[in-house]
Image (tube, rainbow, N blue to C red; front, side, top):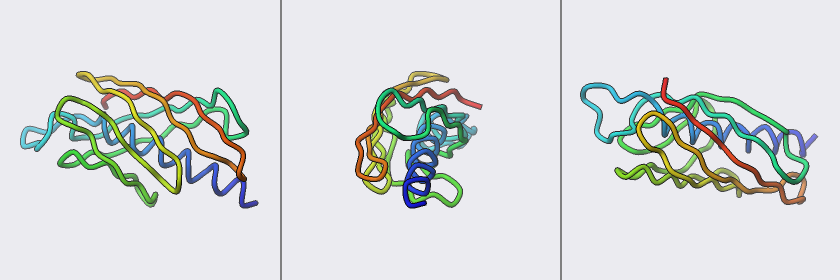
Length: 120
């Protein structure tokens, strides 16, 4: 049960981070990447969920997800750095899209993969 909870939290974190980073920038946005982003994560190794999707929010360069404990930011140049409960994601946004890598653990077993995001 703990394994599924960790997987779900990790998936939500990665998705929230990427989605938030890639959100459409409103007219009064503080950073170029503020807005809503659709994020897809894919596990390449380990026992985490194979694929997960989510929508994230970026406001003033800070990443958040509804109900998920996310900590991270998107730099003005699009550099993504996010963490959640011991899982980490990094990558690059450019315009309306972005991608990167993530790593973490599920029940103590390392897992990792890639993420992709697109602006809503």
